[in-house]
Amino acid sequence: MKKVYITRSMPKITEQLLSAAGFAVKTFEHDRVIDKQTLLCESVNADAVISMLSDKVDNDVIVAASSGRCKIFANYAVGYNNIDIVAAREHSIYVTNTPGVLTDATADLTWALLLDCARRVTEGDKLTRCGEFTGWAPLFMRGVQVTGKTLGLIGAGRIATAVAKRACGFDMKILYYAREAKPDFEQATGATRVDLPALLSQADFVSLHIPLTPDTRYLIGEREIALMKPTAVLLNTARGPVVDEQALVEALRSNRIFAAGFDVYEHEPALTPGLAELDNVVLAPHVGSATFETRDAMARLVVDNVISALNGEVPQNLVW
Image (cartoon, rainbow, N blue to C red; front, side, top):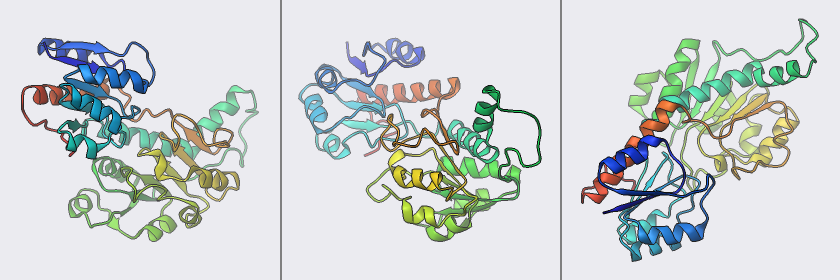
């Protein structure tokens, strides 16, 4: 019987589907990031490994897996920067991800962060719970308008498209930055392509929707933040290291920009010192895909990829 190893507890449907397909399933017994030694040992004995974005599947792990009978690392995420793709290709081990199924959930969360930051919802909730709300006043808790403003999207993929479509209901002007023009994106959203400095200087809300690569690491740093309006909001539901968080802390602390809403972090799960103490930032715990429906859909996609690989087929969501 072929064996599938799962590095962290997943929705029950995962094991149900794998068992129904005739595979033996073993899951890491602790609800935390798996340690490297355990991952090394289990990868040698598995035909397939279902990994998390938080798992570091480096060259050592790939080499160990290839010494056994492992055919695939099926990442339970859209991202796959946690896996050494070059090593996997060299050792003929498939790597897959789960694109598409979490688009709407992540777009919804982006908008939750946007509205929260703009209208200071989390800040107001904290104030009210502490008994500091003493009544309505003309200058009390003023935020920034959303309707009719300019949304700047960095990236033009599935999630950026979904975020842009939601912006139409707020009568927003949409700008986007991408290395190449995206005619389909423009047609679907009415967005206008501009260069990065223009987007940063014109947008009222800047939302990041790009993968983490050597070119995008610290794409938003001190110089880029300095181009933004003092009333602007920065949103990151993409990858943490795309933003230089120390530069962000300084900008928020000095009110260089109005606010920021983040679901991912540069040193996740650790926060850059100073970030948690600021009232003008909303910090979500990487829950962009955390709906019951989406996490189950991701599980189904992971299982489909595993079944294909172990049946001698090329998985649908191959990333190399």
